[in-house]
Length: 139
View 1 (spheres, rainbow, N blue to C red):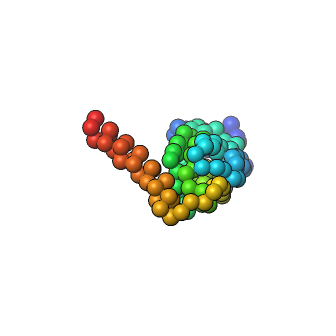
View 2: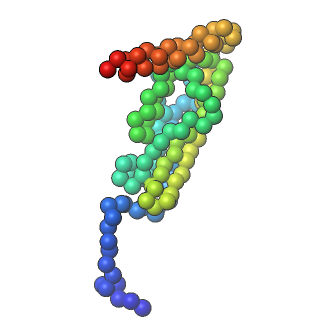
View 3: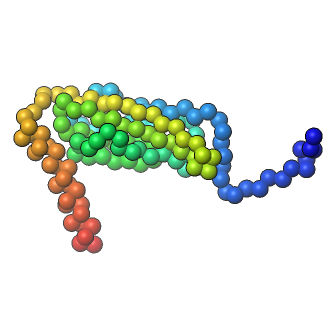
């Protein structure tokens, strides 16, 4: 058996953590249109040190007037009642080749609207995106 004092450690600048990861998403299960809600990807790793977080949109188009992601915090203002949104938080450590994820289904309640009203509400996001593109192109 080799003597432990003869071993050398070579660091490549990665922190490899092999503890079990616990991942969950906190936030409401039911929301109302037009109000801001916060969802948090809760992890037991150090964000930006031994893990990174991303929020892929799996499950279709997001119907909202506002969406903001900053590390493990997602802020969302839903716009269309009667819809369901799936959020997924993926935690990764590419150096260690590890990942874990959690998903949450959120139901948007409130009075349902007609088809034309749904198009109008969904169009608000398209208008905001178009205006944002104008500012980007103008810069």
